[in-house]
Length: 507
Ligand SMILES: Nc1ncnc2c1ncn2[C@@H]1O[C@H](COP(=O)(O)OP(=O)(O)OP(=O)(O)O)[C@@H](O)[C@H]1O
Image (cartoon, rainbow, N blue to C red):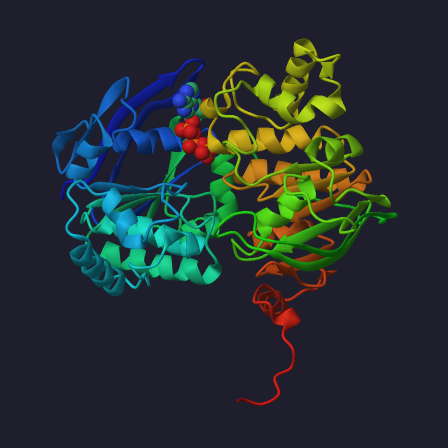
């Protein structure tokens, strides 16, 4: 039998209050795509950080090519042939693709030579990328290609990918998978983390399942149903979100000709958006990333005030009101970026609760913070949304990505909003927790709130929306009832076909 590329034996890593990895053992063969599965907080990131030299294990060891492997830092892991594409890209918007790639290399060649290499790699792996383009102008999928090409230039033997498809369009996912297949043929091994089980079934050869830091199962994803994998991850049976068709009530939010210039370089301007939202309804907004999702969320939250007359809530003009005034009225938002935007990383969960729940939960009185109330509010969110953490005193940055996501969404839902706007509510969240969040959004609507869900996950939108609209280049299509909407119609809406005027011949 040939030796595996990487063998992990008994890897253990504890943090205060949790054992993130407990005696983890498995191996990765040469030329295989190996999935690492597990619910939020199961220990996947900790494990791949250990392989990449970012975390030092308390016990256990690794062997690469049969030789002892204990990288003290990422540089050592890279030198041994391990590369990693992170979930959050670390690119500079104002620099070109080639300049960004050079920044991540130990000994970058001259820029024109590097540009040639980038073209070669991008051509041979079918990843279209122009080295001279400015990164700020690229789509999320293209940015990811910059990171992948940067890794491929190191000719890795093991490529680690952490949730690579969460920001990609279906077409971009196909391109990525073609590249992964090519790498596999060349004998490169891939360790693939994702919560999207159907994708795992498509691309992965074997899967290792973690629960509470331990390996609880291994399976062949090609022959295992997605539901079975999900149930192995959580060790329980999954509930499907359900909803009794609610009655929609009066109009709570009206957008009239909502337009705004792009708030930053490389942002998207909002173009003449009209929308009427009623109490009790869930409106799903789809679209390829970078088509105005963040800007619309900011215009609604009050982070980006807009002109008089463009936004009304319950008949009152609020377009120029700031975040706090809107929160007091019951218009709450949870932005897409949880670390740094939705939550302050170094602050505890109690402090993070105070950041947005002050006005509605009465957490500040006469200028004094009411710590006791803030703490018990944070505890309630932790309990209801099953946030896995030692307690409300934990800093946001110590939570796993999915658990922090549960906290920031739960924090808004538990403030009983009248209008809730959420952007990518289940990003990085495992199947069971995603079902909990979707159910909570449906329950909120059933209790009479109006909910806007902005998401790139079309399945999610179709599952929970009453009406569906698409953002394209900062314009919003007219919402259509979600029920019965076919994939072709959705595709046309996403592509902006809604505002195409009939062509009158060419030239
Ligand atoms: N720097 C840290 N300090 C304290 N605890 C941590 C730290 N990093 C991770 N943890 C804890 O270790 C456990 C495993 O976290 P990890 O990020 O590895 O999970 P994960 O499986 O990657 O989750 P997700 O799918 O949500 O990203 C969690 O309970 C998390 O809170």
